Amino acid sequence: MKRNASPINRLVLAVALAVLATACSREGSQASAAAAPPPPSVGVFVAQAADIPLVTELPGRTAPYLIAEVRPQVTGLVKQRAFKEGSEVKAGELLYQIDPATYKAAHDTAKAGLARAEANLTAAKLKASRYAGLAKIDAVSQQANDDAIAALKLAEADVAAARASIEQARIDLEFTRLASPIAGRIGRSTVTAGALVTANQAQALATVQQLNPIYVDLTQSSAELLRLRSALEAGRLQQAGTVEMPVSLVLEDGTEYAQPGKLAFSEVSVDPATGSVTLRAVFPNPDGVLLPGMYVRAHLEQAVANNAILIPHAGLTRDARGRAIAMVVGSDDTVEERSIKAERSIGDQWVVTEGLAAGERIIVEGLQKVRSGGKVSVQVAGAAGAAPAN
Image 1 (cartoon, rainbow, N blue to C red):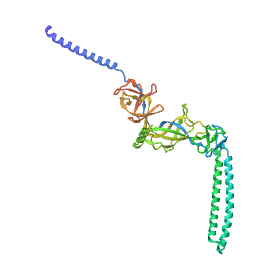
Image 2 (spheres, rainbow, N blue to C red):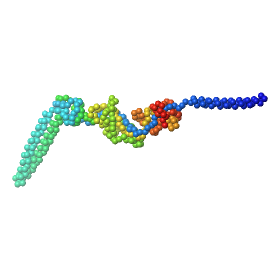
Image 3 (cartoon, one colour):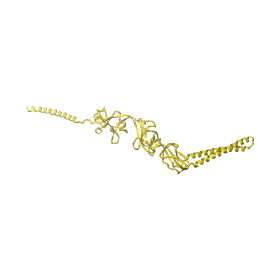
Image 4 (cartoon, helix red, strand yellow):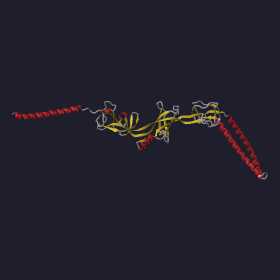
């Protein structure tokens, strides 16, 4: 009996062991499933598309709208300086008075010469008229009549020359009064009363500058202009406006200039020394805040990026090569590392021109917890306990 029961016992024991092993395996699987961590929770930002004006910041310096250097056109002693240095002067306002005595005398002499020439002309007219009548009856020779006619023409020429001399003397006399050719602010004087000045001398006596409005000369690299032109031709960007596009200024101390300006023109050649192009803007300057030579920074809208994607700064990282990347959550909550192109920032957002589409979910919180290909639990960024983003 013991020999017959032994195989049965062994079979029962084997079945019991198998059942026990299966139960242990199920308990181990359940334990492993219970120990698996949940997918990390991340905050996402839904990419938005918009037409973004691309504002370029350019360095520049202010320059006078008009500038006139006051130089004497006659020689003489300065009798009077009639302006206050640094003050505003009007067009035609007296600045310097040169001693006019010698020029007044020359003018009076020229007038006397005209009177003498006119008297000679009267005598020549009477003689020519008389000889013309006598020549008709052969009372005088033809030669005498011709001489009378020639003397009349010479007298007429002398009168014309005398009148020209008076005009020249009058101009020289007026040039003793040096007036401002333009309205503006006058600088320091290089001479005082009693100084001898000469006609058309190299040194200016003073300089008048019109500062309202005022120019701002900006510089932009030719390489940047070429990139902008290529983007415009490719259709990625659109021209922001006409040549007179609006321009705003930031002063040296970081404050914004209150008056808006406009772009007047762009230079047609590149400076070989700097590789840049000059752009000139015009700004109103009623209060005289802008002075010639000031360093400023100008913001101008040169183009518009159509349907550009905006993402927060936190949604962009860089790889080892410095390339911009974003972690995108797909429809199945799987993370994808995406290479993007973001060349400029506006406020607290990047303008992405390649690599993203509107509506895609960009991870901006919890980036350190995710990896490409992994699953995540999605919430709207910045909303604690918010419902998962769809």
